[in-house]
Length: 265
Ligand SMILES: Nc1ncnc2c1ncn2[C@@H]1O[C@H](COP(=O)(O)OP(=O)(O)OP(=O)(O)O)[C@@H](O)[C@H]1O
Image (tube, rainbow, N blue to C red; front, side, top):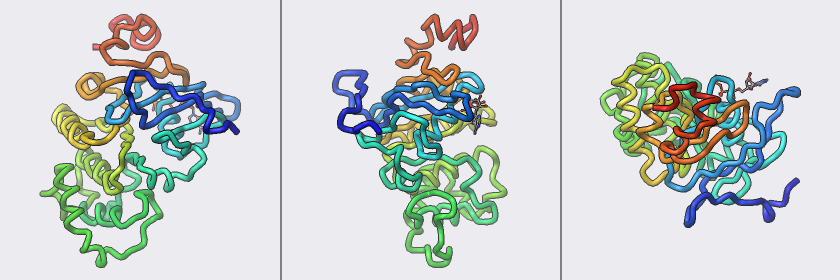
């Protein structure tokens, strides 16, 4: 095992404070290398997008960063401390949360109950909840604040099952916020949404990113260009390019290998 004290730290800009780092990360699935020596550094306060074609390894990298997969080799660092040796709930306690899409929403509970239940959990992970909803009222003001933050105040008493796709994604982000994460990972927050929903999520991500570091996997390039400070492009599990969106979109390797002749817009 590598000594954390000797782990190289990749600062990419003078004065930058890394929040989340991958250091020579490798993940093999039965001989198939899904993550190939990925090193990247995401700075405190940054909104960073991970993009790449289908099968490039984005979800695998997200799972490695949040502890849902253990790396074959390499390290993940959160504010300079190794977290790849920890369980996901311990990583949440250290300040990193991720959205779970529909898996962490209880469809038979109301929107507000979903947030209340997540608030009393030591992490926002499924199976970590045990307090009956009736005892959760003291957390009500906090839940209401989160619902306001994610724009669901008027939907508080609706069953989660009755929410639209976009509203469920808003609730997912709300559930992630219950742990007041310093680093928030969002997996395709605009997937399956029309332009109105996309615009709402862009506003929401900007809002929740205040005072936080946000990492998102995103296919919609207009979302990427509007929201992100820097992006990382994955191809075949490796980092093809990483840097400011404006720079990376002009990188000939990115244009040729990933985006086709038209490139990023
Ligand atoms: N548990 C697994 N076992 C075997 N192979 C896997 C496993 N998980 C992912 N892979 C493979 O690793 C590669 C990367 O998959 P991953 O889902 O990380 O890509 P992705 O960039 O998120 O793709 P998409 O944009 O389609 O969601 C793919 O070839 C996939 O088939």
